Image (cartoon, rainbow, N blue to C red; front, side, top):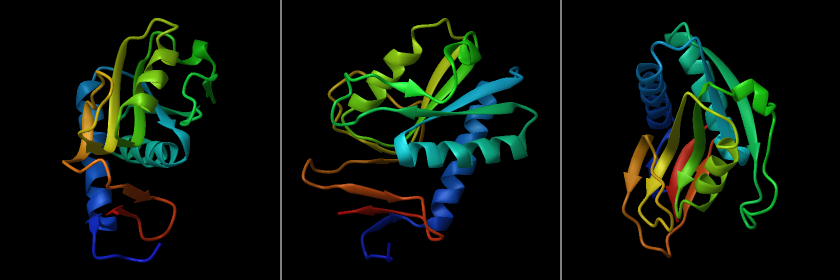
Length: 167
């Protein structure tokens, strides 16, 4: 993706947001030995991997990475995770996604994890928009945006130059 004029967060700013969110995760789990960092879909999982790496560098917490697979167009379909429920039972979980828009993806992903007892459940997003359909919030967020429904937030975390663009 090439740099555009409507860049909301550039690479350096994204890295700063990731570090800040990692510190917030650490602060809310300071007494934990392990924390499950569960990333939703493609971008959420990339963000989760970066949070895991940063959390590991700033604390003694052992982050457990988990990929959450959900059909965003049909969130009622089966949701799967890369780790078994026994591996996150009675643990602290941070559910990670790139953008919180309507809350649909996040709420159905949260529902999936509630089938077992958990110690603590938090959510983290890089971009929080204000168009929620469901009563879900991001506990940790990089940036909050007031946008119109016609605008689209494009997050590129794959390349060497990471950025968030408003289209």
